[in-house]
Length: 98
Image 1 (cartoon, one colour):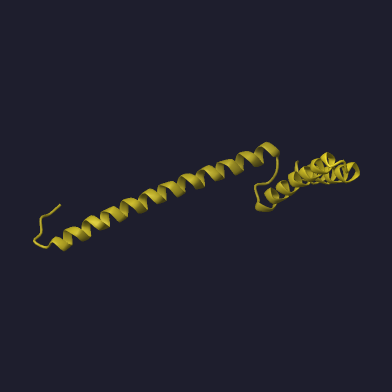
Image 2 (spheres, rainbow, N blue to C red):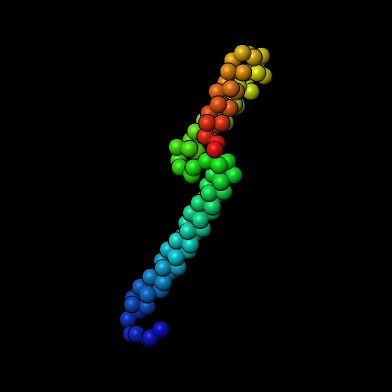
């Protein structure tokens, strides 16, 4: 670091260095989150044997939600509605899995 007679130049350089460290840290954090989410999606799709598209994951979530609704109906002693919801959820999930 060079010595200058202007203290504002030093202050600007110090502030710029602090901002650069913050930006580099945020870039590292977001890169780690992106890598982790990509690895999770790839592992999830390979374990189920489905594509890794957003619509596939939305369909998996919908199928699990339908099964949840069916179990909820069974606890409320609405057995016919519960069986229908569970069968719909299982049908959707079985259609997705290769």
